[in-house]
Length: 290
Image 1 (cartoon, rainbow, N blue to C red):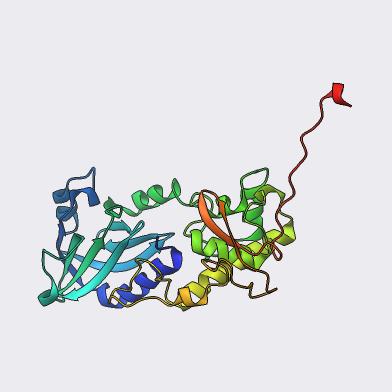
Image 2 (image 1 turned 180 degrees about the horizontal axis):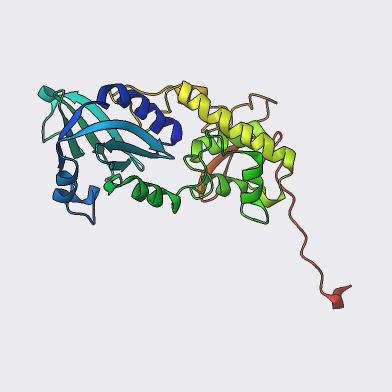
């Protein structure tokens, strides 16, 4: 699934191509893309409006149009956005779910093999803010992502730190790849209960999250599976993974073999020498057993 760096890469590529253009038409070719809203409702809401800004919130891409109309898209697992010339566009393109026809003559195509990607239209800046306020936590590359914010969110929680990082309601945009990379940088085991982290560990975790996301953006995303740039090119971050998908290879820091385990229901990679596994607590004995 594209994570924050992949969506930010797309945002940066689309902004100079789309901002200032007119969205002449939105064709929803797969009603599932915008369900339960009918396709014609989305098309009517955006038709003929000027694109003012291409934004991002967590893993969501936001096309902000004139008069505070916002087209919000989520790529989910296998979605891609491709910019093509009108002459290259055709209805029989495999896995085509939606098409944005631009005043420049180009087309922005939403292509999605597994059909989990979504699109919706929100009218008004307040509606956009309300939509995200109930779904997304702090932006990890924003000024609000502080050690104090992490500490408050983690206090008293027994969930593994990997699950905490993957919770979009806590931190927006971090997924499986960047959680593994951040935890390795912070020397924290993925199964460590997040509420037991010390302030120093939370500082390291914050720095690890930020560094991993920035590295992903610098490499223009990871393309070991479906993710592609808007011109179809691949990202390069998969060539720079420190632990993710490197099972059995030597840890870049200590040389011990990278292990694969399950955490938060996801395949997870860690160096259990650099990231010591948390000790199991012994169950308390009953009074009669003493």
